Length: 304
Image (tube, rainbow, N blue to C red; front, side):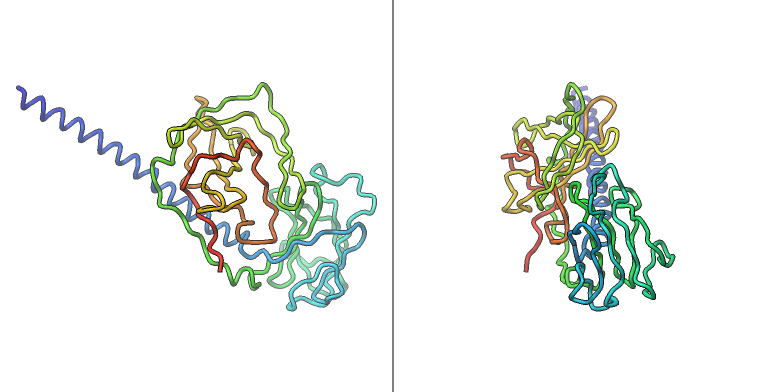
């Protein structure tokens, strides 16, 4: 009887261990697949960024000639047109998607969504899901808002920034850095002004904090709510400026119906400003600058 009981206990332990292993394997695979998707997305969207140009009120000419306000690569025509920012821009900011207009240079091939641009057109900025992108050969231009300030962002897949990109480096995936947190709701949602690296402020919404355990410590982070039940964490930790990027790292999670959320720091990643100077990245709020070390996710970008 004793031997039977021992054998039964061993079977139960073995089954539980197998189930736990399968769960960990599933989480590991999920993190691996997420990293692959993330790298593909960043290589497409952020690695080729090759310019970020401030706009002056009035016309801002663009082209490869050095006399332009917006100087494009040599492969572009000397003048492709001009971006016009209203002198009295009383309606600027996030409530207006099409503050900036583009006036093409006659005879120059500028397209948008595959169609030739021949007349002045108001441009939807990238606060929209599908911003208006102007194409001149392989070069693309669009309106990017840094805070409430309209700028022109350029992508050039043949530029030096894209050609010199050194790739992504990650910590090994470890189960201990996948934790479940408890969402502690604020009395009411509130707007938060988050400064970026250019000194502009982005307005975001926050609804509370997430509390979790890390390295034996109780930790809280304040996420921004990007859509219902979707959290975006902008944070620093004890590895920042050492093994990881000094300014910030990002992490997303979803709020469950039971008020918990899974924070998988194996998926914590660098903002594009870690490797590209033509980006505008938010700086963590003071309460999101942690002392605890979280050596998980993406490591600091490998400099030359």
